[in-house]
Image 1 (cartoon, rainbow, N blue to C red):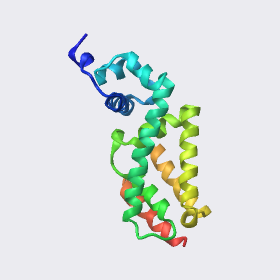
Image 2 (image 1 turned 45 degrees about the vertical axis):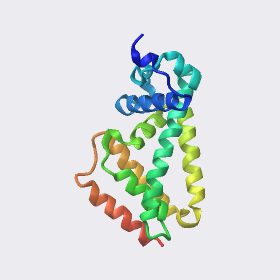
Image 3 (image 1 turned 90 degrees about the vertical axis):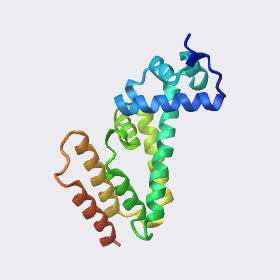
Length: 183
Protein backbone atom coordinates (compact mmCIF):
# COMPACT_ATOMS: atom_id res chain seq x y z
CA UNK A 1 0.00 0.00 0.00
CA UNK A 2 1.34 3.47 -0.84
CA UNK A 3 2.23 6.07 1.78
CA UNK A 4 -0.82 8.08 0.70
CA UNK A 5 -3.05 5.20 1.74
CA UNK A 6 -1.32 4.86 5.13
CA UNK A 7 -1.38 8.54 6.08
CA UNK A 8 -3.85 9.06 8.93
CA UNK A 9 -6.54 11.61 8.27
CA UNK A 10 -9.38 12.88 10.39
CA UNK A 11 -12.89 11.94 9.25
CA UNK A 12 -13.46 15.52 8.06
CA UNK A 13 -10.17 15.52 6.12
CA UNK A 14 -11.03 12.17 4.57
CA UNK A 15 -14.51 13.30 3.56
CA UNK A 16 -13.11 16.57 2.16
CA UNK A 17 -10.41 14.73 0.18
CA UNK A 18 -13.01 12.35 -1.30
CA UNK A 19 -15.37 15.19 -2.24
CA UNK A 20 -12.54 17.19 -3.81
CA UNK A 21 -11.41 14.17 -5.83
CA UNK A 22 -15.01 13.41 -6.89
CA UNK A 23 -15.60 17.05 -7.88
CA UNK A 24 -12.45 17.10 -10.01
CA UNK A 25 -13.47 13.85 -11.70
CA UNK A 26 -17.06 15.05 -12.23
CA UNK A 27 -15.92 18.32 -13.77
CA UNK A 28 -13.65 16.43 -16.18
CA UNK A 29 -15.99 13.56 -17.10
CA UNK A 30 -19.44 14.31 -15.67
CA UNK A 31 -21.06 13.08 -12.48
CA UNK A 32 -22.46 9.96 -14.15
CA UNK A 33 -18.91 8.83 -14.95
CA UNK A 34 -17.73 8.89 -11.32
CA UNK A 35 -15.58 5.88 -10.57
CA UNK A 36 -15.24 5.01 -6.88
CA UNK A 37 -11.79 3.41 -7.35
CA UNK A 38 -10.57 6.48 -9.28
CA UNK A 39 -11.99 8.86 -6.64
CA UNK A 40 -10.35 6.86 -3.83
CA UNK A 41 -7.02 6.74 -5.66
CA UNK A 42 -7.07 10.47 -6.45
CA UNK A 43 -7.77 11.18 -2.77
CA UNK A 44 -5.00 8.85 -1.65
CA UNK A 45 -7.49 6.59 0.11
CA UNK A 46 -9.11 3.21 -0.30
CA UNK A 47 -12.44 2.40 -1.91
CA UNK A 48 -13.53 1.29 1.57
CA UNK A 49 -13.14 4.88 2.76
CA UNK A 50 -15.58 5.98 0.07
CA UNK A 51 -18.12 3.40 1.23
CA UNK A 52 -17.53 4.28 4.89
CA UNK A 53 -18.22 8.00 4.33
CA UNK A 54 -20.91 7.84 1.63
CA UNK A 55 -22.33 4.30 1.63
CA UNK A 56 -22.53 3.99 -2.14
CA UNK A 57 -21.80 5.71 -5.41
CA UNK A 58 -25.27 7.30 -5.17
CA UNK A 59 -24.43 8.60 -1.69
CA UNK A 60 -21.19 10.11 -3.00
CA UNK A 61 -23.03 11.59 -5.97
CA UNK A 62 -25.68 13.19 -3.76
CA UNK A 63 -23.02 14.56 -1.39
CA UNK A 64 -21.15 15.94 -4.37
CA UNK A 65 -24.34 17.59 -5.63
CA UNK A 66 -24.88 19.16 -2.22
CA UNK A 67 -21.28 20.40 -2.35
CA UNK A 68 -21.73 21.84 -5.84
CA UNK A 69 -25.01 23.49 -4.87
CA UNK A 70 -23.19 25.09 -1.92
CA UNK A 71 -20.62 26.49 -4.38
CA UNK A 72 -23.38 27.72 -6.68
CA UNK A 73 -25.15 29.30 -3.71
CA UNK A 74 -21.91 31.11 -2.80
CA UNK A 75 -21.58 32.43 -6.38
CA UNK A 76 -25.21 33.55 -6.38
CA UNK A 77 -24.92 35.15 -2.96
CA UNK A 78 -21.85 37.12 -4.12
CA UNK A 79 -23.73 38.30 -7.22
CA UNK A 80 -26.77 39.18 -5.09
CA UNK A 81 -24.59 41.18 -2.69
CA UNK A 82 -23.16 43.16 -5.63
CA UNK A 83 -26.62 43.91 -7.06
CA UNK A 84 -28.47 47.16 -6.31
CA UNK A 85 -31.50 45.12 -5.24
CA UNK A 86 -35.14 45.45 -6.15
CA UNK A 87 -37.13 43.84 -8.94
CA UNK A 88 -35.23 41.01 -10.69
CA UNK A 89 -32.39 40.75 -8.19
CA UNK A 90 -32.21 36.95 -8.20
CA UNK A 91 -32.68 36.72 -11.97
CA UNK A 92 -29.77 39.12 -12.53
CA UNK A 93 -27.57 37.03 -10.22
CA UNK A 94 -28.66 33.87 -12.04
CA UNK A 95 -27.83 35.39 -15.43
CA UNK A 96 -24.45 36.67 -14.24
CA UNK A 97 -23.44 33.33 -12.72
CA UNK A 98 -24.56 31.36 -15.76
CA UNK A 99 -22.70 33.62 -18.20
CA UNK A 100 -19.45 33.72 -16.22
CA UNK A 101 -16.75 32.30 -18.49
CA UNK A 102 -15.68 29.30 -16.43
CA UNK A 103 -16.08 26.57 -19.01
CA UNK A 104 -15.90 23.00 -17.80
CA UNK A 105 -14.55 24.11 -14.40
CA UNK A 106 -17.90 25.61 -13.49
CA UNK A 107 -19.93 23.79 -10.83
CA UNK A 108 -22.98 24.84 -12.87
CA UNK A 109 -21.82 22.70 -15.79
CA UNK A 110 -21.10 19.54 -13.84
CA UNK A 111 -24.29 19.64 -11.82
CA UNK A 112 -26.71 20.92 -14.42
CA UNK A 113 -25.62 18.52 -17.12
CA UNK A 114 -25.96 15.55 -14.79
CA UNK A 115 -29.36 16.74 -13.58
CA UNK A 116 -30.61 16.41 -17.15
CA UNK A 117 -30.09 12.64 -17.12
CA UNK A 118 -30.27 11.48 -13.50
CA UNK A 119 -33.75 11.67 -11.88
CA UNK A 120 -32.43 11.86 -8.31
CA UNK A 121 -30.09 14.72 -9.24
CA UNK A 122 -32.90 16.40 -11.18
CA UNK A 123 -34.99 16.29 -7.98
CA UNK A 124 -32.14 17.79 -5.92
CA UNK A 125 -31.62 20.55 -8.50
CA UNK A 126 -35.37 21.20 -8.80
CA UNK A 127 -35.82 21.37 -5.03
CA UNK A 128 -32.87 23.75 -4.74
CA UNK A 129 -34.21 26.02 -7.50
CA UNK A 130 -37.71 26.01 -6.00
CA UNK A 131 -36.27 27.02 -2.62
CA UNK A 132 -34.21 29.81 -4.19
CA UNK A 133 -37.22 31.09 -6.12
CA UNK A 134 -39.39 30.98 -2.98
CA UNK A 135 -36.71 32.90 -1.11
CA UNK A 136 -36.69 35.58 -3.82
CA UNK A 137 -40.41 35.58 -4.64
CA UNK A 138 -40.83 39.20 -3.56
CA UNK A 139 -38.42 40.40 -6.26
CA UNK A 140 -38.49 37.67 -8.91
CA UNK A 141 -41.95 36.11 -9.09
CA UNK A 142 -43.10 37.27 -12.51
CA UNK A 143 -43.62 35.47 -15.81
CA UNK A 144 -41.27 37.91 -17.56
CA UNK A 145 -38.40 37.13 -15.20
CA UNK A 146 -39.12 33.41 -15.53
CA UNK A 147 -38.79 33.80 -19.31
CA UNK A 148 -35.40 35.50 -18.81
CA UNK A 149 -34.21 32.66 -16.55
CA UNK A 150 -35.41 30.12 -19.14
CA UNK A 151 -33.58 32.06 -21.87
CA UNK A 152 -30.47 31.89 -19.67
CA UNK A 153 -30.91 28.13 -19.35
CA UNK A 154 -31.28 27.96 -23.14
CA UNK A 155 -28.00 29.85 -23.56
CA UNK A 156 -26.27 27.38 -21.24
CA UNK A 157 -27.65 24.37 -23.10
CA UNK A 158 -26.81 25.86 -26.52
CA UNK A 159 -23.26 26.54 -25.27
CA UNK A 160 -22.85 22.90 -24.24
CA UNK A 161 -23.93 21.87 -27.72
CA UNK A 162 -21.48 24.27 -29.37
CA UNK A 163 -24.18 26.70 -30.53
CA UNK A 164 -23.47 29.68 -28.29
CA UNK A 165 -24.11 33.12 -29.77
CA UNK A 166 -21.13 34.86 -31.34
CA UNK A 167 -21.15 37.49 -28.56
CA UNK A 168 -22.42 35.88 -25.35
CA UNK A 169 -21.58 38.96 -23.28
CA UNK A 170 -23.89 41.05 -25.49
CA UNK A 171 -26.69 38.56 -24.83
CA UNK A 172 -25.87 38.69 -21.11
CA UNK A 173 -26.08 42.51 -21.13
CA UNK A 174 -29.43 42.40 -22.96
CA UNK A 175 -30.88 39.85 -20.51
CA UNK A 176 -29.68 41.93 -17.56
CA UNK A 177 -31.22 45.06 -19.07
CA UNK A 178 -34.49 43.20 -19.61
CA UNK A 179 -34.68 42.38 -15.87
CA UNK A 180 -34.96 46.11 -15.24
CA UNK A 181 -37.45 46.82 -18.01
CA UNK A 182 -40.08 44.50 -16.51
CA UNK A 183 -40.33 46.26 -13.14
